[in-house]
Every structure is written in C-alpha cells, then in structure tokens.
Length: 167
Ligand code: NI
Image (tube, rainbow, N blue to C red; front, top):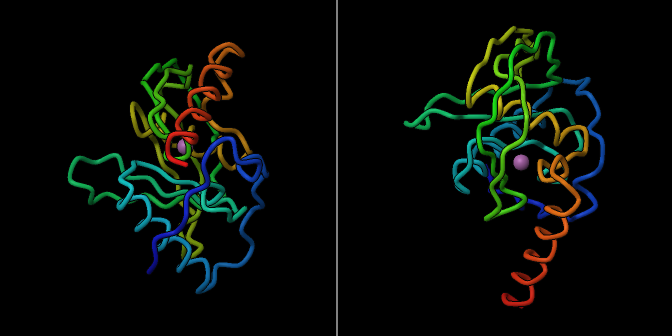
C-alpha cells in the first residue's frame, strides 16, 4: 500500500469528471487500498479518487469514531434523497476551511464494492453528507464551489496567503 498525494484546491485537475469503473481488477483493489490508507493517514473521513488524480468513480468513507468501518463505493448513484442537512464540511483538498452546504439528510445509494458486487446503502447524518461531498468530487466539484462568490474569493485569498507563507 502507499500514501497518495492529495491535490489541493484550486488545482484544475480537481475539476475533471470521473469515468465509471468498467473492470474490477487488481489495480482497482490496489487503488482502493491506497486511498483508504491515504484517508486514514491524513486523517480524513472521506476521499474521492479525483483527489488523488485518478479520474474514476471510486470513493472511500469512514465516519466511525474507531476508524474501523470503511465504506467503499464504486460507481455510486443516489437513487433517493430526503430532507435537508446542514452539517459543517471540510475537505482534505481544502485544508483549514470549514463551511455548511445544503445537502440531503438521508440518501439511498446504489454502488459496487471493489470486487464488483452491487449493493444498496442507506445513509443519514454525517455519512450521508460525506458521501454527497465525495460524489461531488467525482463530478469535478469541490465543496467550497457551492458557497457564494464572495466566500470563494475569500477562501482563494486565504489559500494564496498560506502558500506564500509556506514558500
Ligand atoms: Ni473533499
């Protein structure tokens, strides 16, 4: 396994749209294992393949306190979305920035695991919000891009300042 490099917003590669996985092979299993290791090491509660510059529809999520409940979603599709949630979000690609976006409270998702087995998942609360956040990444969208233009300008200015400091 390996820890992968996470792209940082506003890297243009975060805007690529991920392709569905067609072949469930060893390289997919390796990608999932590496993504999980990268997410746990960060540490984070979710990671989309787009964030490690692999533009395939693959997500790993673990919102458990004990970090022992890994959920792998390949080619995820939301087939039902109910209610409104406003849990604060952060993103490994936008460190230090937290904000609230309107998301569905409960979702039903259809997906495959890394072995190609189809399954259905019902999620609510943090898990629901996290899956919606990661699915946005697969569409090339970073959570801050849901915010107002003014907030986005402020975030970009803050990131530019951080980069100047670390340079
Ligand atoms: Ni994210």
